[in-house]
Amino acid sequence: MKREGAAAAAPKRSNPLLKDKGVRLVEFDAARSPEDAKKQIHLMGEVTGHPDRAHVQIDRLDAAVARVHQLTARKPYRVLAVSRRGWVTGGDSLTSSLLANGSPRLRARARGPLRC
Image (cartoon, rainbow, N blue to C red; front, side):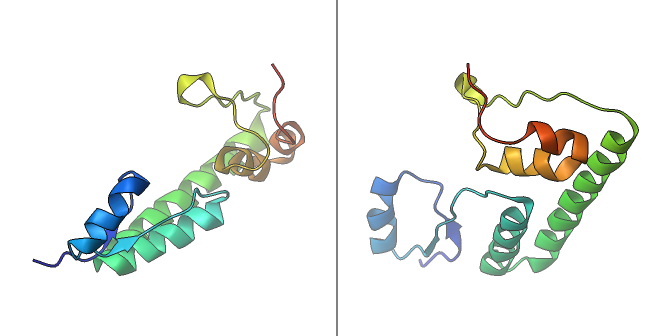
């Protein structure tokens, strides 16, 4: 049985085994911006044969970004973005890109990594 469109969420050491079994792997880099994320969602929709589902998710992401713009235009927010295990993102991440695109108030705070 040949499977199509599996995303490479498995550890890298599993990839050759999966490829040998006929599983088509598509690898995605970490998204560094909302545009990167939308490109990956679009590709995943194409790979899986569900472009309609991908468009729904892209629309949801666009709507969420628009809500952030609306909220931050009315009231200034302070944000400390902390990932699992306490790691704080640097300046080249999806989180910092989302913050930088949120509003001028957030943009000023989203430059560079937080030093602890």
